Length: 456
Image (tube, rainbow, N blue to C red; front, side):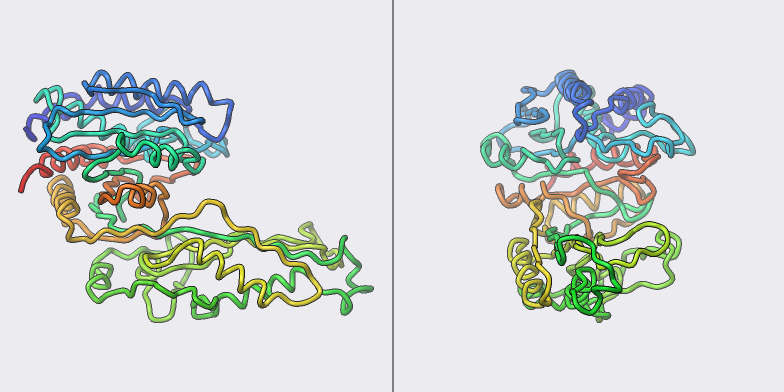
């Protein structure tokens, strides 16, 4: 069964690539209403393709925003497991367009990479699954397991309507486990099991002083400077050892076990000098850079502004200052509680003479983690290794994918993150691309995985 599907993919590679290029050519940018027609065209493309593959039920479902493409295949029988496959067909804007070396919506192959917006995030990876389903249906007339497909069009705008849909239609989306390919590998041609994701939350701090900018010579020493006050608040929240000093921030954090530290140690480290242009790392005291990014919570200032920003000097006491803060969370931390702790700390340490306001980030997510020895994970690792010819490494990632936490929270099902992107894909940036080698080996991985699922 497996060999016939692999043979089909090899013999039909040119046609598969052409169909993928057709999909990538649709400018399905979800953030811009100008592309509403293109969003609908992308959803129509998926609906047509799923029908052509032979799914039992295919439909576009209204979300109140961009349509969700849903499909079911139920012919594997009641004893076969059911997988929920999630992906998204919307893409990021292409700005700045002048930095693209080719048209972002005219796919082009250069040096073994397919360049186009969405080639990696997430159209290319969504398409790989559909191409593998097609290969099974064309050669065997059936899939190895029952499948439910959920492909949305709002991921790049925060999946505004998805949580409600998942919550309200639990019978529709319920499955034995879920598979998501909206992630990647730690290096090109290095199969990687992502068994954990960090959670996310944040706040904005607004500090207001005088009702307009004041002359610093006339009012310095009499009026509190909002930027100085903001800096006082921020420096009280994390010390030079990269330890967050907000009371209660680490309460409930799961300790990093010796076994996990050994798993992390085996992962190839990043050369930060070449990727970030820095000479040394700065990690939480007692942890390596890999341990901190993968498995410890973080606190970062994403932006600060206030006062004069132009050329030269303007001698003022600014009227206001703002800082934007986000935290990546680990298992044991609750986003709402962390926001409350941050808010309390800010108000507790705020100096007199200014007004302080804390605005809580609306989009938050809990961390997700599945045990690496879960049979679904072990079979995924085995399938990766078969296709790529290298031992699979196990990592937790510093990024967040809210839908992972939502599926886990609503359905309590295991989630397998089967990603094939690479660090060089330039997600959300000009010249996004995807290695054709990852496309081929990724589809081979999926063929092996669906076959492995039914083995004892």
